[in-house]
Amino acid sequence: MIKPLVRILTLILFPFLVHAQISNLKIITFNIRYDNPDDGPYRWELRKPLVLDVIQQEIPEILGFQEALHDQVIGLQRALPGYEWVGKGRDDGKELGEFNPIFFSSDRFKLKNKGTFWLSETPNTAGSKSWNSACNRIVTWVKLYDRQSRKKVFVFNTHFDHFSKEARVESAHLLVSAIKQIAKDNWVIVTGDFNDIEGSQMYKILTGSALDLSLMNTSRISRKETMGPSYTFIGFPFKPDEGNTIDFIFTKNNKSATVTEHRVSTYNNQGRYPSDHLPVIVNFELKIKTKRYAF
Image (cartoon, rainbow, N blue to C red; front, side, top):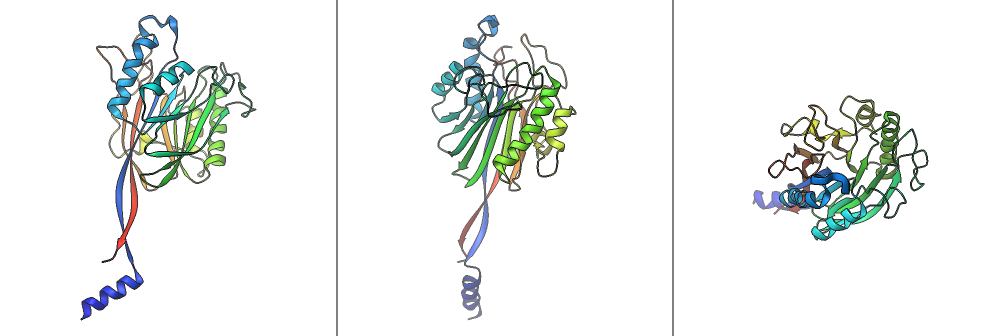
């Protein structure tokens, strides 16, 4: 008689029991090098199949590309039918110049919002540049709804200037401020080629800003030890420098997401690499709270 009463009271007071399920999410950041016809044996038409090999082997849910020209973006879109993409050309806000496109699984995610801003003193002006930057630079962002984990995530993808330290520093300040304004307290993932290394002033701004602005380098919070070399820029021909890691994936504001793996991929085909950068791959493990009746 006591057990039935306990069950009835439990159902009245606690009608649901909360359980946690696991959802995995894989992210790649990849500078694929722009389509330069003067690249000879490293030209895009010879590298494109290798780039696709990486994507089709890894099957990421979200990809942040850098340096892609419009024709490259369209070619990737046609070869990757399971993805949607967002992005603009940095020269005119349309199709001219390099893109930082974000590709995402169309089955898993629903696009809720998107935008592009320029890394300059006038971020809403297409083609603008500042701070002695050699090139105009942009940030592409999306707000996605994850149908699997039922979470919102903001993804920012960027490519900082290679020439001007001042531009990288100011771009870092602008990026963290924009993330706070756009994403507020929601989960954030940042992918990109930052053209600077850990310990640089740019890196310290991204990871050491005020508590509500700071980003976390996924390689530093990965459950498993980071796999792969200590560099991401390899050049053409292959000539890497130890410690020259300039491509990163950062995150913030999701206590239920754990970085389980961080890798720098060295995929190549008989010494032929997909790009002059190595792709960085991160796996997240998301806890999904589910409810079921107590009995």
